[in-house]
Amino acid sequence: MIIYHGYTGRAADYLISKGIKPGDYVIVKLVEGVVFRGILLPRPEIYASSSLIVVKLENGYNVGLDLAKIESIEKTTIEGKASQVEVSRITQNPMLPRVTLISTGGTIASKVDYSTGAVTPALKPEEIIEWIPELGEVAFVNAREVMNIFSEDMTPQHWEKIAFEVYREIDSGAQGVVIAHGTDTMSYTASAMAFSIFNKPVPIVLVGAQRSSDRPSTDAVFNLISAFLVAAKAPFAESVVVMHSNTSDELNSVHRGVKVRKMHTSRRDAFQSINDKPIALVNPITREIKVVGKIIEYRGVKKPELRAKFDEKVALIKAYPGLQQEIIDFLVDKGFHGIVVEGTGLGHIANRLIESIKRAVENNIPVVMTSQCLFGRVNMNVYSTGRRLIEAGVIPGHDILPETAYVKLSWILGSITRDLGEVRKWFELNLVGEFNDRHVPGLYPRWNNE
Image (cartoon, rainbow, N blue to C red; front, side, top):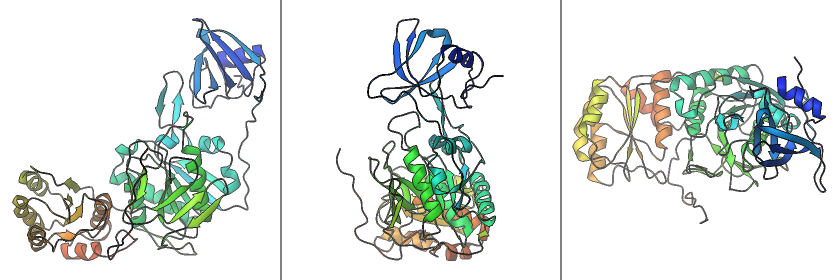
């Protein structure tokens, strides 16, 4: 079978017969009269159809064109446009830090099926590396796929598998690990990595993309280069999330994995540190990493320890007007092992629910209180409702994020203990910077109006 710059079958034969190769500027006329102008791209191996050619249009978008609909194609050169595009591959330098890219799926690891226009999480890690050859100038790259799922399908069992694979890479000498992950639940996985690997010697960097790689506004390349820079060169050894600092391609923020949340559905700077500052800022163009926050774990020669069991019978519930006692009672009756409440204000839930919460605690089920306000901290001594909850045995969550509290409680119950008293002790330990010991002013960021 002929393989012509990734093209096979009819597409390869057609392009060869026309003397056209990737990098040529082409004008394609379809049978119905529509005309496309742009640069012919090499065909990645992931595209299954042998009858499609892929063209990058002048507006930056890529389009797949079926041979059956093409009336004519001609190569041309126009002033101000290059007629050839170099298709380069990574040159591995063994003197650079060894960084492993672990792919789990998501937009940053997505391909476009040009026959349907759909974007699905199926891009292999080695194809990401080929796509961004600059990564080979930052690190000696190892890459593999450990799963291929949407981030909304993540479960605690997936965290266990990811943690094991990260630990295995670190233990075998990797000087940094990058996890390509969907953005919707990335902060949960970042928290899971923070708790499940003790004594980290190198950074664990989670990275995603808000815009898919077929769009001119994609943030995938910018984010991946920054993530590799952090994994290879950062002085800290923490579980972090690396994403855009603002909507422009200027800087990436390095957020502590236990203090970050996705705060917008689609903005490129959707991720924000909550009740904390970013650890660092990264410029992938100058390749500078500037530490701007507090480092908790430093890079160094250390022996990591894996404790990566998570209890799946932990629930995260949101307090809202009308929340019924039956919901708490159901969790108790179904044998759940832990409950995290995303309470109102300073850490409250309706008084009518307190007896059900007390029953949960009496059944050896720890109940942790956080705040849905996100910014600020829980203080359950101010109002009578909070004091009644403390008397019922609720564990105050300081300024910990609800999702981080959920991950931490799941981890404690799975990896450490089910004893209620010991769970309380472990939860009140600030293990990886998941909460501040006191209120820190000036940590309430606001976006500019746009």
